[in-house]
Image 1 (cartoon, one colour):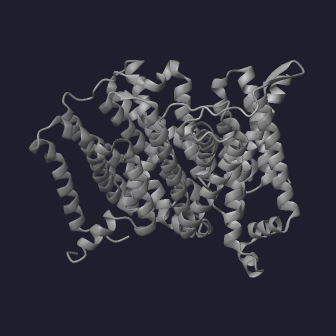
Image 2 (image 1 turned 180 degrees about the horizontal axis):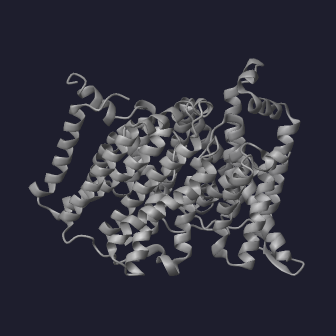
Image 3 (image 1 turned 45 degrees about the horizontal axis):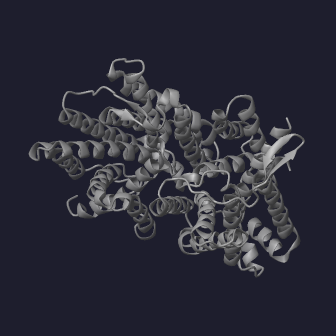
Length: 309
Length: 281
């Protein structure tokens, strides 16, 4: 992976500045809301990319971590009426706990076990939310969470700050010795193992990190919507996140975050298509798989800035 | 007691029909088909359209629906999966995309409300004091029959021998003059067809709606993992284990907990015997 250059940092700062100023320049609650969702999707996509993009172990149930983070916030705020700020760290803890539960038995193994287990676990948890409706509110979910901030604008800035921290932390990790090991695992797991690297340990810890950020994003989302409901666990959420990472360029992290923001905005614009929206999404995925296997955002950025380095 | 025995057998048969197709296409073509659940849903919906909209008699509609779905499976394998076969991840992605596309297409055309498919047999039977719907019994009988035929087909015919050869070593099979790609198409047709048949058989007594494929597919994953990926006898035994444990849990505790059975089974299998029960043979 090439060195982080000044132009990358400048580009990042410009993007953050545009995102921070957009709702001030165009003062509309609608835009602020949409951008908050964009930013939260950015956190989810970047966290997916850290584990699956770097190690090549595809996670088909990221919604498991998103949903558990959000439901933790829901239970905490509505049932035990605790201080709403507890829900962010606790959402992280619960999501990480689930990542150990699924990751420990499956990441030791080769083959598609991890992908299948993630997909199954998220699907079953969604089902359990409906079955144990006395506790989870069933189809309607849990209502009436407390907002964390006074105005939506402050909350948006807060979420944007968390996205920035997420991307910076994950990028630094990905560029460290640690990230090099993860990429080496993607390249050739057997060789890594032969070189004395505890492959399983690295994979599980990277899944825990990924789950932690996803859970944080989930709790943030819960406090934005002020409600949580079973579709948070759905396969659709997982696949949406995966499509975002693919569009961004797998393994790049910043590309995933930018693609998540752009695609969420695009989805808002496609709202007129109503129920055809997901179709358009799925078709996008198929096109990308066939024609742009390296993604769009990260390769584009690299090409654009090639001269300036 | 007898009730558990019969109902467990019915759900085992349905699970086995789903799991065998899933494990077959993985074992032969190394395709992990996340669209397997949509074959099941498409089977049920094709039967619904043929019987309730086009008024085709049920006995003609059912085989026709199986053929339609098998054709769909073959087309999917040929035009979407085969160009991407080099990468396992791309195959997973494309099949997941297909399953979502199918689910959305069903949702857009039929809406989310439940649809009804007429029963093949309306009578209720009483076996040893236990009432059981004839349709469930039919599902059991058909399931056993299909698995038996499949076994005979693979073990006793030339084509079956070719399928086994490809599953052991596709390249060597190709050198021996076996048309590997055609074998993949045939296996995909069988896999999609059995899943569709399972969907048709359960449609009269379970709900027919766009998302109906997801959960049975998750069960099929669980069975295939417990049975050992790619192993047909393993997945049949695992279907029996899972079908019966779910029925027992439903009777002894409550139906709410049945969904957890497969999850626990998967976790336990992966912890203590990742190769599945196949390793015992």
